[in-house]
Length: 271
Image (cartoon, rainbow, N blue to C red):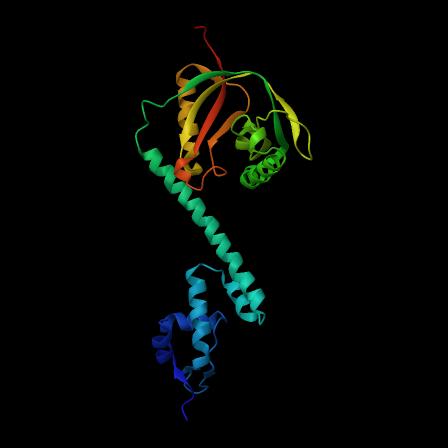
């Protein structure tokens, strides 16, 4: 009776090279069912085909060897699923970052538009319903914003709103990775409720432009607006403002999003 599948046969059945199977053996990921003590020949069983293919797929996804071992070592299907799902989530996050970087680079490779529409706008003082936090990490801004907006929307239904929502972001958020963030909605009667407060926003002069589409490359629009500010002898003074004319809470179509970016300014030279 033959001892099992030779390494060559096993390689053909699993579409894994003999070299790869030897490497899996040396790493302790997939040991042969039997090794001839005289010849050193490796033999595998048919039951080892699925595990071999699982290892191959996990390594294609760059799952670290230690995690592959942990996945194979557990007999609990739920725990195994959690370990794999955790890595898949990390891959999806990495894909999102890669996609964002690609979009930004494509925008940067295009010539700067000569007709960047910038408006110098004087915004009067106003009182809004707002949620603020003095220390938000840049990496946490999106989930923080989503939670804050959900609170505002729950307290102030559409009939109470008088304009699109906005955000105010301290320079430290971008310069140091952590800073003050405020999300607000103009409403008829701002009032306190939980984290929500009635916030008095000061009068401010802004250089305003509109970013069209998803936020993957909004940094490019920020950069172009900043260049415009410098070229027109204007200086930055204070946190930046964003107004979400059309955003994720309005439509699932990112290409339809329209975000106003307001850069606080004052003139360096008289008119």
